[in-house]
Length: 551
Ligand SMILES: C[S@@+](CC[C@H](N)C(=O)[O-])C[C@H]1O[C@@H](n2cnc3c(N)ncnc32)[C@H](O)[C@@H]1O
Image (tube, rainbow, N blue to C red; front, side, top):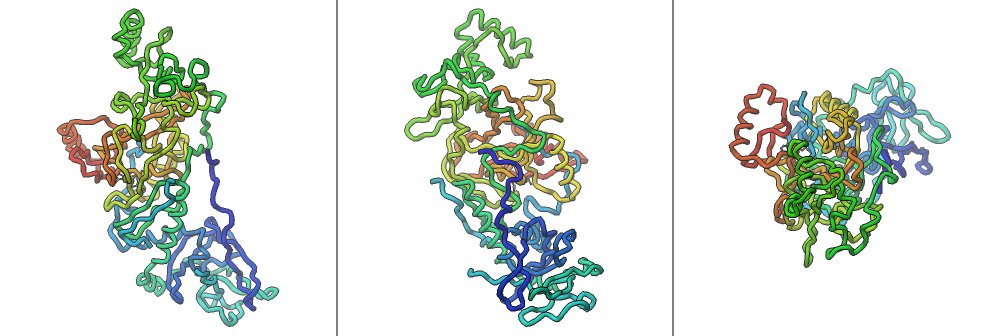
Protein backbone atom coordinates (compact mmCIF):
# COMPACT_ATOMS: atom_id res chain seq x y z
CA UNK A 1 0.00 0.00 0.00
CA UNK A 2 1.25 3.49 -0.74
CA UNK A 3 0.32 6.14 1.76
CA UNK A 4 -0.68 9.52 0.59
CA UNK A 5 1.43 12.38 1.84
CA UNK A 6 0.30 13.94 5.07
CA UNK A 7 -2.02 11.08 5.86
CA UNK A 8 -1.86 11.59 9.58
CA UNK A 9 -3.15 10.56 12.91
CA UNK A 10 -5.03 13.74 13.59
CA UNK A 11 -8.49 12.31 13.93
CA UNK A 12 -10.14 11.56 17.26
CA UNK A 13 -8.06 14.01 19.20
CA UNK A 14 -8.82 14.49 22.86
CA UNK A 15 -10.21 17.78 23.87
CA UNK A 16 -9.52 20.34 26.54
CA UNK A 17 -12.54 21.26 28.54
CA UNK A 18 -13.49 24.64 29.76
CA UNK A 19 -14.75 23.78 33.17
CA UNK A 20 -18.36 23.94 34.01
CA UNK A 21 -18.93 25.61 37.35
CA UNK A 22 -21.25 22.90 38.45
CA UNK A 23 -18.63 20.45 37.21
CA UNK A 24 -20.99 18.44 35.01
CA UNK A 25 -21.39 19.35 31.35
CA UNK A 26 -18.34 20.64 29.54
CA UNK A 27 -17.68 22.71 26.50
CA UNK A 28 -14.57 21.45 24.84
CA UNK A 29 -11.88 22.40 22.44
CA UNK A 30 -9.25 20.15 21.00
CA UNK A 31 -5.64 19.72 21.97
CA UNK A 32 -4.16 19.11 18.57
CA UNK A 33 -0.38 19.14 18.17
CA UNK A 34 -0.58 21.99 15.69
CA UNK A 35 -2.19 24.24 18.33
CA UNK A 36 0.80 23.96 20.60
CA UNK A 37 3.86 26.11 20.21
CA UNK A 38 5.90 24.15 22.71
CA UNK A 39 6.10 22.78 26.21
CA UNK A 40 8.00 25.11 28.50
CA UNK A 41 7.97 23.59 31.97
CA UNK A 42 6.75 20.71 34.04
CA UNK A 43 5.72 20.00 37.62
CA UNK A 44 4.17 17.35 39.79
CA UNK A 45 0.72 18.02 41.16
CA UNK A 46 -1.11 15.47 43.31
CA UNK A 47 1.43 12.92 42.07
CA UNK A 48 0.50 13.63 38.47
CA UNK A 49 2.96 15.16 36.04
CA UNK A 50 1.76 18.30 34.36
CA UNK A 51 3.26 20.20 31.48
CA UNK A 52 3.05 23.90 30.83
CA UNK A 53 1.88 24.42 27.26
CA UNK A 54 2.63 27.56 25.32
CA UNK A 55 -0.19 27.78 22.79
CA UNK A 56 0.23 29.14 19.32
CA UNK A 57 -0.60 32.76 19.73
CA UNK A 58 -2.58 33.15 16.48
CA UNK A 59 -5.43 31.41 18.21
CA UNK A 60 -6.97 34.25 20.16
CA UNK A 61 -9.62 32.06 21.71
CA UNK A 62 -7.16 30.26 23.95
CA UNK A 63 -5.17 31.28 26.93
CA UNK A 64 -1.51 31.54 26.01
CA UNK A 65 -0.20 29.17 28.60
CA UNK A 66 -1.76 26.45 30.67
CA UNK A 67 -0.85 23.34 32.63
CA UNK A 68 -2.05 19.94 31.42
CA UNK A 69 -1.69 16.39 32.52
CA UNK A 70 -0.47 13.77 30.05
CA UNK A 71 -3.84 12.27 29.26
CA UNK A 72 -4.98 15.58 27.81
CA UNK A 73 -1.78 15.71 25.82
CA UNK A 74 -2.04 12.16 24.50
CA UNK A 75 -1.79 13.31 20.88
CA UNK A 76 0.82 15.90 21.65
CA UNK A 77 3.45 13.68 23.23
CA UNK A 78 5.92 14.58 20.51
CA UNK A 79 5.98 18.12 21.96
CA UNK A 80 6.50 16.70 25.45
CA UNK A 81 9.30 14.54 24.07
CA UNK A 82 11.07 17.53 22.55
CA UNK A 83 10.85 19.34 25.89
CA UNK A 84 12.06 16.28 27.73
CA UNK A 85 15.08 15.88 25.46
CA UNK A 86 15.98 19.55 25.90
CA UNK A 87 15.78 19.30 29.66
CA UNK A 88 17.80 16.10 29.71
CA UNK A 89 20.41 17.41 27.29
CA UNK A 90 20.97 20.34 29.64
CA UNK A 91 21.61 17.88 32.43
CA UNK A 92 23.59 15.18 30.63
CA UNK A 93 26.40 14.72 28.20
CA UNK A 94 25.00 14.16 24.71
CA UNK A 95 24.75 10.90 22.91
CA UNK A 96 25.80 10.24 19.34
CA UNK A 97 23.01 12.28 17.82
CA UNK A 98 23.24 15.12 20.27
CA UNK A 99 21.57 18.37 19.45
CA UNK A 100 24.27 20.68 20.65
CA UNK A 101 27.41 19.89 18.70
CA UNK A 102 28.49 22.21 15.94
CA UNK A 103 26.85 21.43 12.72
CA UNK A 104 28.38 20.59 9.41
CA UNK A 105 28.22 23.64 7.18
CA UNK A 106 29.33 22.57 3.78
CA UNK A 107 29.30 18.80 3.84
CA UNK A 108 26.41 17.13 2.10
CA UNK A 109 25.08 14.41 4.31
CA UNK A 110 23.13 12.51 1.71
CA UNK A 111 24.06 8.89 1.50
CA UNK A 112 25.14 7.49 -1.78
CA UNK A 113 23.76 4.48 -3.64
CA UNK A 114 25.76 1.68 -4.12
CA UNK A 115 10.06 6.40 30.98
CA UNK A 116 12.19 3.76 29.52
CA UNK A 117 13.74 1.92 32.36
CA UNK A 118 17.24 1.07 31.23
CA UNK A 119 17.70 -2.58 30.56
CA UNK A 120 14.35 -3.21 28.98
CA UNK A 121 13.19 -4.87 25.82
CA UNK A 122 9.72 -4.17 24.51
CA UNK A 123 7.98 -6.02 21.76
CA UNK A 124 6.04 -4.19 19.16
CA UNK A 125 3.85 -6.52 17.17
CA UNK A 126 5.18 -10.06 16.75
CA UNK A 127 5.57 -11.26 13.10
CA UNK A 128 3.14 -13.78 13.33
CA UNK A 129 -5.70 4.91 34.51
CA UNK A 130 -8.05 5.37 35.31
CA UNK A 131 -8.50 8.92 33.88
CA UNK A 132 -6.79 11.52 35.96
CA UNK A 133 -9.48 14.07 35.31
CA UNK A 134 -8.47 16.98 33.20
CA UNK A 135 -6.60 19.21 35.51
CA UNK A 136 -7.03 22.29 33.42
CA UNK A 137 -7.92 25.02 35.73
CA UNK A 138 -8.26 28.60 34.86
CA UNK A 139 -6.89 31.51 36.77
CA UNK A 140 -4.74 34.55 36.26
CA UNK A 141 -1.04 34.90 36.77
CA UNK A 142 -0.82 38.43 38.00
CA UNK A 143 -2.95 41.20 39.26
CA UNK A 144 -2.87 42.85 35.85
CA UNK A 145 -4.18 39.70 34.27
CA UNK A 146 -6.75 39.17 36.91
CA UNK A 147 -8.17 42.63 36.87
CA UNK A 148 -11.08 41.50 34.79
CA UNK A 149 -11.17 38.07 36.33
CA UNK A 150 -13.78 36.85 38.59
CA UNK A 151 -12.25 34.94 41.44
CA UNK A 152 -12.23 31.34 40.45
CA UNK A 153 -14.88 29.37 42.20
CA UNK A 154 -14.15 26.39 44.38
CA UNK A 155 -12.17 23.61 42.71
CA UNK A 156 -10.28 26.06 40.58
CA UNK A 157 -6.79 26.88 41.71
CA UNK A 158 -4.62 29.80 40.87
CA UNK A 159 -1.58 29.81 38.60
CA UNK A 160 -2.75 27.05 36.28
CA UNK A 161 -3.70 29.09 33.26
CA UNK A 162 -1.93 32.27 32.40
CA UNK A 163 -2.52 35.38 30.41
CA UNK A 164 -6.24 35.23 30.48
CA UNK A 165 -9.26 36.54 32.26
CA UNK A 166 -12.53 34.81 32.93
CA UNK A 167 -16.04 35.32 31.88
CA UNK A 168 -19.00 33.40 33.11
CA UNK A 169 -21.08 32.45 30.15
CA UNK A 170 -24.08 30.20 30.40
CA UNK A 171 -22.65 28.64 33.49
CA UNK A 172 -19.24 28.14 32.02
CA UNK A 173 -15.98 29.76 32.91
CA UNK A 174 -14.47 30.90 29.68
CA UNK A 175 -10.85 31.95 29.32
CA UNK A 176 -10.23 35.17 27.45
CA UNK A 177 -6.68 36.15 26.57
CA UNK A 178 -5.38 39.39 27.99
CA UNK A 179 -3.75 41.39 25.22
CA UNK A 180 -0.95 43.18 27.00
CA UNK A 181 0.55 40.36 29.00
CA UNK A 182 3.44 38.73 27.18
CA UNK A 183 4.00 35.06 27.34
CA UNK A 184 7.73 35.54 27.74
CA UNK A 185 7.44 35.97 31.48
CA UNK A 186 6.95 32.24 31.93
CA UNK A 187 8.28 29.93 33.16
CA UNK A 188 9.33 31.73 36.27
CA UNK A 189 12.60 30.95 38.01
CA UNK A 190 10.59 29.22 40.73
CA UNK A 191 8.89 26.98 38.17
CA UNK A 192 12.23 26.13 36.61
CA UNK A 193 13.74 25.26 39.98
CA UNK A 194 10.81 23.04 40.78
CA UNK A 195 11.07 21.38 37.37
CA UNK A 196 14.75 20.65 37.89
CA UNK A 197 13.91 18.39 40.78
CA UNK A 198 10.86 16.79 39.23
CA UNK A 199 11.29 13.55 37.32
CA UNK A 200 9.38 12.98 34.09
CA UNK A 201 8.87 9.25 34.37
CA UNK A 202 5.16 9.40 33.55
CA UNK A 203 5.97 11.25 30.34
CA UNK A 204 8.77 8.84 29.50
CA UNK A 205 6.42 5.95 29.99
CA UNK A 206 3.63 7.52 27.92
CA UNK A 207 6.06 8.38 25.13
CA UNK A 208 7.44 4.86 25.02
CA UNK A 209 3.93 3.37 24.97
CA UNK A 210 3.07 5.62 22.06
CA UNK A 211 6.16 4.54 20.14
CA UNK A 212 5.31 0.88 20.78
CA UNK A 213 1.86 1.54 19.37
CA UNK A 214 3.51 3.03 16.30
CA UNK A 215 5.70 -0.07 16.03
CA UNK A 216 2.60 -2.18 15.54
CA UNK A 217 2.51 -0.76 12.03
CA UNK A 218 5.72 -2.62 11.45
CA UNK A 219 5.48 -6.20 12.75
CA UNK A 220 8.56 -8.09 13.88
CA UNK A 221 10.39 -5.14 15.41
CA UNK A 222 11.16 -4.60 19.07
CA UNK A 223 12.64 -1.76 21.02
CA UNK A 224 15.46 -1.97 23.54
CA UNK A 225 17.17 0.62 25.67
CA UNK A 226 19.90 -0.35 28.09
CA UNK A 227 21.50 3.07 28.01
CA UNK A 228 19.03 5.70 29.15
CA UNK A 229 15.33 6.43 29.40
CA UNK A 230 14.75 7.93 25.95
CA UNK A 231 12.49 6.70 23.15
CA UNK A 232 12.93 7.29 19.42
CA UNK A 233 11.24 10.41 18.14
CA UNK A 234 7.45 10.41 17.98
CA UNK A 235 7.72 12.87 15.11
CA UNK A 236 7.93 9.87 12.89
CA UNK A 237 5.51 7.65 11.04
CA UNK A 238 6.12 4.05 10.04
CA UNK A 239 5.24 3.51 6.39
CA UNK A 240 5.33 0.49 4.12
CA UNK A 241 6.03 2.19 0.80
CA UNK A 242 7.54 5.42 -0.50
CA UNK A 243 5.52 8.58 0.10
CA UNK A 244 5.91 10.88 -2.87
CA UNK A 245 6.37 14.54 -2.08
CA UNK A 246 5.33 17.42 -4.31
CA UNK A 247 7.11 17.39 -7.65
CA UNK A 248 7.94 13.70 -7.57
CA UNK A 249 5.92 11.31 -9.62
CA UNK A 250 6.80 7.65 -10.11
CA UNK A 251 6.05 6.23 -13.55
CA UNK A 252 2.51 4.90 -13.56
CA UNK A 253 1.61 1.23 -13.93
CA UNK A 254 0.97 1.84 -17.62
CA UNK A 255 4.72 2.29 -18.06
CA UNK A 256 5.63 -0.90 -16.25
CA UNK A 257 6.72 -3.62 -18.63
CA UNK A 258 6.75 -7.21 -17.49
CA UNK A 259 8.03 -10.43 -18.99
CA UNK A 260 4.58 -10.93 -20.42
CA UNK A 261 4.86 -13.39 -23.23
CA UNK A 262 7.63 -15.91 -23.05
CA UNK A 263 7.72 -16.39 -19.30
CA UNK A 264 5.24 -18.55 -17.49
CA UNK A 265 4.81 -19.96 -14.00
CA UNK A 266 6.99 -22.97 -13.20
CA UNK A 267 9.24 -22.21 -16.11
CA UNK A 268 12.44 -23.45 -14.54
CA UNK A 269 13.47 -26.06 -12.01
CA UNK A 270 13.29 -23.48 -9.24
CA UNK A 271 10.10 -21.88 -10.56
CA UNK A 272 10.29 -18.65 -12.50
CA UNK A 273 12.30 -16.65 -14.90
CA UNK A 274 15.80 -18.04 -14.58
CA UNK A 275 15.91 -18.73 -18.33
CA UNK A 276 17.54 -15.37 -18.56
CA UNK A 277 17.62 -15.09 -22.33
CA UNK A 278 13.82 -15.14 -22.32
CA UNK A 279 12.93 -12.97 -19.35
CA UNK A 280 12.36 -9.41 -20.58
CA UNK A 281 12.72 -8.10 -17.02
CA UNK A 282 16.44 -8.83 -17.29
CA UNK A 283 16.86 -6.66 -20.42
CA UNK A 284 19.17 -4.25 -18.58
CA UNK A 285 20.56 -6.75 -16.09
CA UNK A 286 24.26 -7.62 -15.91
CA UNK A 287 25.55 -9.69 -18.80
CA UNK A 288 26.82 -13.12 -17.88
CA UNK A 289 30.20 -12.60 -19.50
CA UNK A 290 31.57 -15.99 -18.47
CA UNK A 291 28.82 -17.87 -20.24
CA UNK A 292 29.05 -15.55 -23.23
CA UNK A 293 32.82 -16.11 -23.48
CA UNK A 294 32.31 -19.87 -23.26
CA UNK A 295 29.84 -19.68 -26.14
CA UNK A 296 32.24 -17.45 -28.11
CA UNK A 297 31.35 -16.60 -31.69
CA UNK A 298 30.14 -13.41 -33.31
CA UNK A 299 27.87 -12.38 -30.45
CA UNK A 300 30.78 -12.47 -28.03
CA UNK A 301 32.99 -10.47 -30.40
CA UNK A 302 30.33 -7.85 -30.98
CA UNK A 303 29.72 -7.61 -27.22
CA UNK A 304 33.43 -7.14 -26.55
CA UNK A 305 33.47 -4.32 -29.11
CA UNK A 306 30.52 -2.56 -27.42
CA UNK A 307 32.20 -2.96 -24.04
CA UNK A 308 35.43 -1.42 -25.29
CA UNK A 309 33.46 1.49 -26.73
CA UNK A 310 31.97 1.94 -23.24
CA UNK A 311 35.37 2.33 -21.62
CA UNK A 312 35.60 -1.31 -20.54
CA UNK A 313 32.34 -1.21 -18.58
CA UNK A 314 29.35 -3.37 -19.35
CA UNK A 315 27.26 -1.48 -21.93
CA UNK A 316 23.80 -0.46 -20.77
CA UNK A 317 22.18 -1.80 -23.94
CA UNK A 318 23.40 -4.32 -26.48
CA UNK A 319 21.43 -3.55 -29.69
CA UNK A 320 20.95 -6.54 -31.95
CA UNK A 321 22.40 -8.91 -29.34
CA UNK A 322 20.74 -11.05 -26.74
CA UNK A 323 23.61 -12.07 -24.47
CA UNK A 324 22.93 -14.30 -21.43
CA UNK A 325 22.12 -12.34 -18.28
CA UNK A 326 22.96 -12.85 -14.64
CA UNK A 327 20.02 -14.04 -12.58
CA UNK A 328 19.94 -12.16 -9.25
CA UNK A 329 18.83 -14.70 -6.68
CA UNK A 330 19.82 -18.12 -5.47
CA UNK A 331 17.11 -20.46 -4.22
CA UNK A 332 17.58 -21.58 -0.63
CA UNK A 333 16.80 -25.18 0.24
CA UNK A 334 15.55 -26.85 3.40
CA UNK A 335 14.39 -23.69 5.19
CA UNK A 336 17.36 -21.59 4.07
CA UNK A 337 16.15 -18.29 2.60
CA UNK A 338 16.75 -17.22 -0.99
CA UNK A 339 19.86 -15.07 -1.25
CA UNK A 340 21.47 -12.57 -3.56
CA UNK A 341 23.96 -14.22 -5.92
CA UNK A 342 27.62 -13.57 -4.96
CA UNK A 343 28.17 -11.84 -8.32
CA UNK A 344 25.58 -9.17 -7.48
CA UNK A 345 26.75 -8.97 -3.87
CA UNK A 346 30.21 -7.98 -5.05
CA UNK A 347 29.56 -6.13 -8.27
CA UNK A 348 26.62 -3.89 -7.32
CA UNK A 349 24.84 -4.09 -10.68
CA UNK A 350 21.18 -3.07 -10.46
CA UNK A 351 18.81 -5.92 -9.76
CA UNK A 352 15.62 -6.15 -11.81
CA UNK A 353 12.78 -8.14 -10.27
CA UNK A 354 9.65 -9.40 -11.98
CA UNK A 355 6.58 -7.23 -11.47
CA UNK A 356 2.82 -6.92 -11.60
CA UNK A 357 2.74 -7.18 -15.40
CA UNK A 358 4.79 -10.37 -15.52
CA UNK A 359 3.35 -13.68 -16.53
CA UNK A 360 5.50 -15.75 -14.21
CA UNK A 361 3.34 -15.48 -11.09
CA UNK A 362 4.04 -15.03 -7.39
CA UNK A 363 6.38 -17.96 -6.83
CA UNK A 364 8.87 -16.76 -9.42
CA UNK A 365 12.36 -16.79 -7.92
CA UNK A 366 12.87 -13.28 -9.26
CA UNK A 367 10.60 -11.80 -6.56
CA UNK A 368 12.33 -11.33 -3.25
CA UNK A 369 12.61 -7.72 -2.17
CA UNK A 370 9.02 -7.03 -3.22
CA UNK A 371 7.83 -9.61 -0.67
CA UNK A 372 9.20 -7.49 2.15
CA UNK A 373 11.21 -8.05 5.28
CA UNK A 374 11.14 -11.53 6.77
CA UNK A 375 13.68 -11.06 9.55
CA UNK A 376 13.04 -9.94 13.11
CA UNK A 377 14.94 -6.88 14.21
CA UNK A 378 15.45 -4.72 17.29
CA UNK A 379 15.81 -0.95 17.41
CA UNK A 380 18.23 -0.37 20.28
CA UNK A 381 20.00 2.54 21.91
CA UNK A 382 23.75 2.70 21.36
CA UNK A 383 25.98 4.58 23.80
CA UNK A 384 27.46 6.89 21.16
CA UNK A 385 25.54 6.76 17.88
CA UNK A 386 21.93 7.32 18.86
CA UNK A 387 19.62 4.44 17.93
CA UNK A 388 20.73 1.46 15.89
CA UNK A 389 19.32 -1.80 14.55
CA UNK A 390 20.33 -5.31 15.44
CA UNK A 391 19.17 -8.65 14.13
CA UNK A 392 17.19 -11.05 16.31
CA UNK A 393 18.19 -14.02 14.18
CA UNK A 394 21.25 -15.42 12.44
CA UNK A 395 21.50 -14.11 8.89
CA UNK A 396 23.39 -15.69 6.05
CA UNK A 397 25.49 -13.86 3.47
CA UNK A 398 23.23 -12.53 0.74
CA UNK A 399 20.05 -12.59 2.86
CA UNK A 400 17.61 -9.77 2.25
CA UNK A 401 16.90 -7.53 5.24
CA UNK A 402 14.66 -4.63 4.24
CA UNK A 403 14.43 -1.60 1.96
CA UNK A 404 15.09 2.05 2.87
CA UNK A 405 11.83 4.01 2.95
CA UNK A 406 10.84 7.60 3.40
CA UNK A 407 9.43 10.61 1.63
CA UNK A 408 10.74 10.88 -1.91
CA UNK A 409 11.77 14.51 -2.41
CA UNK A 410 13.01 16.60 -5.27
CA UNK A 411 16.66 17.48 -4.86
CA UNK A 412 15.67 21.10 -4.24
CA UNK A 413 13.44 20.16 -1.33
CA UNK A 414 16.15 17.89 0.10
CA UNK A 415 18.61 20.77 -0.04
CA UNK A 416 16.14 23.07 1.65
CA UNK A 417 15.72 20.55 4.45
CA UNK A 418 19.50 20.19 4.83
CA UNK A 419 19.85 23.95 4.92
CA UNK A 420 17.14 24.27 7.55
CA UNK A 421 18.92 21.67 9.69
CA UNK A 422 22.19 23.59 9.37
CA UNK A 423 20.58 26.90 10.22
CA UNK A 424 18.92 25.41 13.28
CA UNK A 425 22.46 25.11 14.60
CA UNK A 426 21.83 21.58 15.72
CA UNK A 427 23.84 18.57 14.82
CA UNK A 428 20.79 16.76 13.55
CA UNK A 429 21.06 13.20 12.37
CA UNK A 430 20.72 12.92 8.61
CA UNK A 431 18.25 10.54 7.00
CA UNK A 432 18.68 11.58 3.37
CA UNK A 433 19.46 9.01 0.71
CA UNK A 434 20.06 10.08 -2.89
CA UNK A 435 18.56 7.95 -5.67
CA UNK A 436 21.60 8.56 -7.84
CA UNK A 437 22.37 5.08 -9.13
CA UNK A 438 21.42 5.80 -12.75
CA UNK A 439 23.11 9.18 -13.10
CA UNK A 440 24.61 9.29 -16.56
CA UNK A 441 21.98 7.04 -18.13
CA UNK A 442 19.84 10.04 -19.03
CA UNK A 443 21.07 13.59 -19.72
CA UNK A 444 18.33 14.98 -17.44
CA UNK A 445 19.39 12.90 -14.47
CA UNK A 446 22.32 14.28 -12.51
CA UNK A 447 23.40 15.04 -8.94
CA UNK A 448 21.20 18.12 -8.84
CA UNK A 449 18.08 16.56 -10.26
CA UNK A 450 17.98 13.05 -8.81
CA UNK A 451 15.34 12.38 -6.19
CA UNK A 452 16.25 11.98 -2.54
CA UNK A 453 14.59 9.74 0.06
CA UNK A 454 14.17 11.35 3.47
CA UNK A 455 13.52 8.90 6.30
CA UNK A 456 13.44 11.47 9.08
CA UNK A 457 9.69 11.89 9.50
CA UNK A 458 8.40 8.85 7.64
CA UNK A 459 10.21 5.61 7.08
CA UNK A 460 10.78 2.13 8.37
CA UNK A 461 13.22 0.31 10.61
CA UNK A 462 16.20 0.80 8.27
CA UNK A 463 16.25 4.55 8.96
CA UNK A 464 17.71 3.59 12.34
CA UNK A 465 20.65 1.72 10.76
CA UNK A 466 24.00 3.28 11.57
CA UNK A 467 27.07 3.73 9.46
CA UNK A 468 30.19 1.61 9.67
CA UNK A 469 33.37 1.94 7.64
CA UNK A 470 33.52 -1.86 7.78
CA UNK A 471 29.85 -2.76 7.50
CA UNK A 472 28.12 -6.12 7.59
CA UNK A 473 25.33 -5.07 5.19
CA UNK A 474 25.31 -3.40 1.83
CA UNK A 475 22.71 -1.47 -0.08
CA UNK A 476 21.64 -2.49 -3.57
CA UNK A 477 19.48 -0.99 -6.29
CA UNK A 478 16.40 -3.12 -6.87
CA UNK A 479 14.00 -2.07 -9.59
CA UNK A 480 10.48 -3.27 -10.26
CA UNK A 481 10.25 -1.13 -13.34
CA UNK A 482 13.27 -1.35 -15.60
CA UNK A 483 12.23 1.86 -17.39
CA UNK A 484 12.16 4.04 -14.28
CA UNK A 485 15.64 5.33 -13.49
CA UNK A 486 14.34 7.95 -11.06
CA UNK A 487 12.55 5.83 -8.51
CA UNK A 488 13.75 2.43 -7.38
CA UNK A 489 14.23 0.48 -4.16
CA UNK A 490 17.33 0.69 -2.02
CA UNK A 491 17.55 -2.80 -0.51
CA UNK A 492 19.85 -3.99 2.27
CA UNK A 493 21.37 -7.44 2.10
CA UNK A 494 23.72 -9.17 4.55
CA UNK A 495 27.21 -8.83 3.13
CA UNK A 496 28.48 -11.65 5.34
CA UNK A 497 26.98 -14.13 7.77
CA UNK A 498 25.69 -12.10 10.72
CA UNK A 499 25.08 -13.63 14.13
CA UNK A 500 21.90 -13.01 16.10
CA UNK A 501 22.35 -9.88 18.26
CA UNK A 502 24.87 -8.15 15.99
CA UNK A 503 24.22 -4.57 14.98
CA UNK A 504 23.39 -4.13 11.29
CA UNK A 505 25.42 -1.41 9.61
CA UNK A 506 26.13 -0.13 6.14
CA UNK A 507 28.59 2.31 4.62
CA UNK A 508 26.84 5.67 4.15
CA UNK A 509 29.30 6.51 1.41
CA UNK A 510 28.81 3.15 -0.25
CA UNK A 511 32.50 2.63 -0.83
CA UNK A 512 33.96 -0.65 -1.98
CA UNK A 513 36.09 -2.53 0.48
CA UNK A 514 39.39 -0.75 1.08
CA UNK A 515 42.80 -1.88 2.24
CA UNK A 516 43.69 -0.91 5.78
CA UNK A 517 46.73 1.22 4.80
CA UNK A 518 44.63 3.12 2.29
CA UNK A 519 42.09 3.85 5.01
CA UNK A 520 44.83 4.98 7.41
CA UNK A 521 46.18 7.35 4.79
CA UNK A 522 42.68 8.77 4.24
CA UNK A 523 42.19 9.21 7.97
CA UNK A 524 45.46 11.11 8.30
CA UNK A 525 44.54 13.35 5.38
CA UNK A 526 41.15 14.02 6.91
CA UNK A 527 42.73 14.88 10.26
CA UNK A 528 44.90 17.51 8.57
CA UNK A 529 41.96 18.99 6.70
CA UNK A 530 41.17 22.37 8.31
CA UNK A 531 37.48 21.83 7.57
CA UNK A 532 37.29 18.58 9.42
CA UNK A 533 35.65 20.12 12.46
CA UNK A 534 32.64 20.64 10.22
CA UNK A 535 32.38 16.92 9.73
CA UNK A 536 30.69 14.39 11.88
CA UNK A 537 33.10 12.05 13.67
CA UNK A 538 32.53 8.40 13.05
CA UNK A 539 32.18 6.17 16.10
CA UNK A 540 31.92 2.90 14.22
CA UNK A 541 34.95 1.51 16.01
CA UNK A 542 36.16 -0.50 13.01
CA UNK A 543 39.89 -0.92 12.47
CA UNK A 544 39.32 0.51 9.00
CA UNK A 545 37.39 3.52 10.31
CA UNK A 546 37.87 6.55 8.04
CA UNK A 547 37.32 8.91 10.97
CA UNK A 548 34.36 10.85 9.63
CA UNK A 549 30.87 10.04 8.53
CA UNK A 550 30.65 12.32 5.54
CA UNK A 551 33.64 13.30 3.41
C1 LIG B 1 20.18 7.34 9.45
S1 LIG B 1 20.54 7.94 11.01
C2 LIG B 1 20.85 6.44 11.89
C3 LIG B 1 19.98 6.35 13.10
C4 LIG B 1 20.37 7.29 14.20
N1 LIG B 1 21.47 6.74 14.98
C5 LIG B 1 19.19 7.61 15.09
O1 LIG B 1 19.34 7.59 16.32
O2 LIG B 1 18.12 7.94 14.60
C6 LIG B 1 22.10 8.65 10.76
C7 LIG B 1 22.65 9.39 11.96
O3 LIG B 1 23.07 8.47 12.98
C8 LIG B 1 24.30 8.89 13.57
N2 LIG B 1 25.33 7.89 13.22
C9 LIG B 1 25.18 6.85 12.40
N3 LIG B 1 26.31 6.14 12.30
C10 LIG B 1 27.23 6.75 13.07
C11 LIG B 1 28.61 6.50 13.37
N4 LIG B 1 29.26 5.47 12.86
N5 LIG B 1 29.24 7.36 14.20
C12 LIG B 1 28.58 8.42 14.74
N6 LIG B 1 27.27 8.70 14.50
C13 LIG B 1 26.61 7.87 13.69
C14 LIG B 1 24.63 10.24 12.92
O4 LIG B 1 24.07 11.24 13.74
C15 LIG B 1 23.88 10.18 11.60
O5 LIG B 1 23.56 11.46 11.09
